[in-house]
Amino acid sequence: MLGSNDAIVSTAGLMMGVAASKATTTAILVAGIAGLGAGAMSMAVGEFVSVSSQRDAEQADIAIEKQELVESPEAELMELAGIYRERGLDKDLAMKVAKQLSARDNLGAHLRDELGIEENNRARPLQAAWISAVSFAVFAMVPILALVVAPADFRMHTIAGVTLASLAGLGALGGKLGGAPMGRASLRVTLGGAFALGVTFLIGRLVGISV
Image (tube, rainbow, N blue to C red; front, side):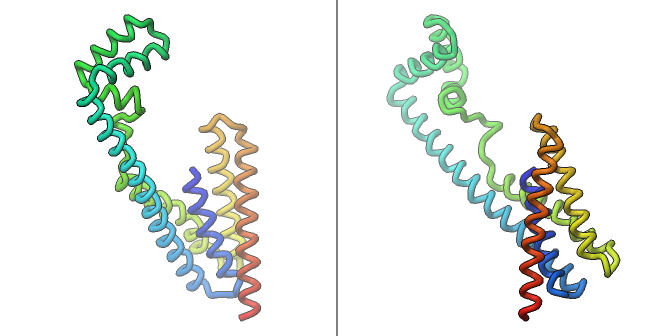
């Protein structure tokens, strides 16, 4: 949700800034498409680096756990049983559960219950990168499509209107999914987007006048 809002606001803001400088429709469209491409690549690279760091940390933890299981299996078993005792099991049952789970998948039991690492939730840098890039590109198309369908005399009004309406809808959806008041969430996102568009419009107008 945050990524979609960012895609819409950043692309629309860029286009509004260029439009405010009295640029042609073609120039505004090029700016929007360039913003889409740059934003998608930025999101992809950022996610890849971030999730790669998370994966490296996971792999380091796994290597340490493997070494400890080889060097101190009894201590690791007691540690696992202690985790189950903290969760409410009595001493004998906690040890029995620890032994049974260790016999089935010793490393997996420790990764899951000691470190919180599960195979299905492991960090996947490439997956995170392409999903972020596609998500940004899809939502960045909103202000671009608004420009394409807008009459020449109302291009800035159309971009701003479609952008703010999209943000309001996404804000309400985010509030609903998160169990928060939809109106408050929608208003917060919409006002933030309006402020961002206003700032970039002002910058574009000032630069256009000075140039």
